[in-house]
Length: 170
Image (cartoon, rainbow, N blue to C red; front, side):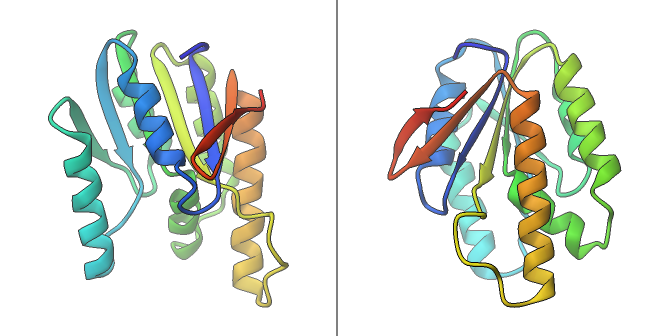
C-alpha cells in the first residue's frame, strides 16, 4: 500500500471491505480492525460474527460505534495497520444519537493528519442514487457525503470499488 492513509469507497456489496482487508493484510505490522457496527438485531449480529471469523487471528478488533477518533488514536503506532470499517455506519450512529458531526469529524481529521501507522478507512458512496424522500434519510445522505469528502481530502490515496474492481482515484 503506497501512502500512509487511504479511503476505500464504493456502493453496498461492491467489494470495498474485502479490498481494504486485503490491502491491510499485505502490509507488515500489527493489524487492528476498528468496527463501527452495532448489533441491533440477529442479522447484524450474524454479519458481525461472520466478518470477525473471516479476518482471522492476526487481527485485534476494537469496537468504536461513536468514539472513532479516540479509537484510531489509541491504536495508532508506527507498526500498526488500522482498518476502520465503516465511516457510513459511524455517521448513522452519530445521527441516531443526535450528535453533531462537526467536532467528531474534525477530531478524526486531526488524528489522520498526525497518525504514525497506516490507516485504511472504508465508506459507502451513498450519493449516486435518487434524492431520499424523507428528511432523516436526506440528513443521513448529506452527513455521509460530508464525511466522505473531508476524509478523501485528508488521506493520501482513495480507491473507488465498483463490482469488486478497485479504481485508484487519488
